[in-house]
Image (cartoon, rainbow, N blue to C red; front, side, top):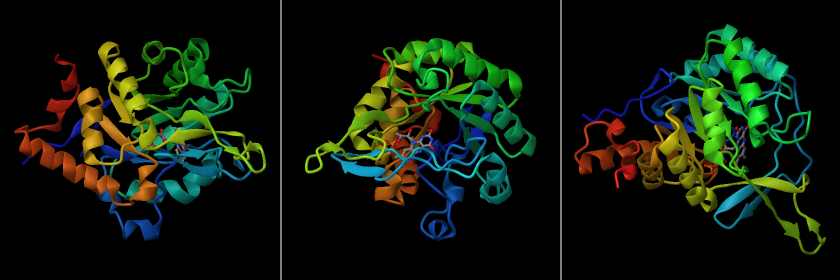
Amino acid sequence: MIDLTVKIAGVTLGNPVMPASGCFEILPEQERVLDPAILGAIVNKTIFLKARAGNPPPRIRETPGGMLNSIGIPGEGVEAFIEHKLGALSALGPPLIISIAGNSVEEFCRIARIIEDTGKAELLELNLSCPNLNDGLHWAARKETLFEVVSAVTEAVSLPVAAKLSPAVTDIVEMAATARKAGAAALSLVNTFKGLVIDIEKKRPLLGNITGGLSGPAIRPLALYCVYEVYRSVDIPIIGMGGIASWRDAVEFMLAGATAVAVGMYNFVNPLVMAEVVEGIDRYLAANSFSSVKEIIGLAHRI
Ligand SMILES: Cc1cc2nc3c(=O)[nH]c(=O)nc-3n(C[C@H](O)[C@H](O)[C@H](O)COP(=O)(O)O)c2cc1C
């Protein structure tokens, strides 16, 4: 028997595999394809305080090895989320990682407290890639705003907090260290990379929001590099993501230093991918004579 359990910020996961936020809605029809109970954790699509409509269409475009999306995080708002979805998510079994975002520091703290009061979340993931209303830059673009929001939330709640960082920065290691200093107990690396597609017939950007976030295998080496670099200097657990499409990719992220991995865009290509990743990691560990998945975390740094 191989031990697949890992620990993120004091939360024990049955295995290191989970969906990336926004990429796996648990619907009754999906449960017939993939049993969510096999996952290491469940992660919701980011919720805001109030309902949001999202961005104008078109919102999605397939690109080489990936997908550009400018969905814009539409949603029902935190109270409706609690009323309609949280109970069902929590009944699935695996620990719940609740992804939240706010337009202001106060909003982040309010949602965090509301979620904490439900008693159903094990970990809060702060989506810091959305713009803040003061300067329009995303929260994780500058050390000052990153520190401000992460420290405010970690002071406001006793739930552990994972800071989900954007790769659109000069130095991701500096940002990761800032999040840790502000009290983050874990890091989620990374969110999408900003990209553009132009419609050559209409001679203008194709997406309704002009730019979008690139995800999928196209970003894997970029995301893997972020995880590798951050692991070398920041000593809190990393949930690694970006283009994971198979168990081999997941193993790469763990060898680079991720304690757990999240699968995003590839769920749309292969709805069974997360189950295949769990099974594949197990087989890889057995074939390489490991008794615990924890033994491979960061192993690529030995040289
Ligand atoms: C359709 C779509 C919706 C997403 N929605 C969210 C979201 O609500 N919150 C968030 O933090 N990240 C969101 N992401 C980013 C993913 O969680 C993930 O960080 C990124 O896509 C990289 O992983 P991947 O290449 O496996 O998709 C979204 C990505 C996609 C493709």
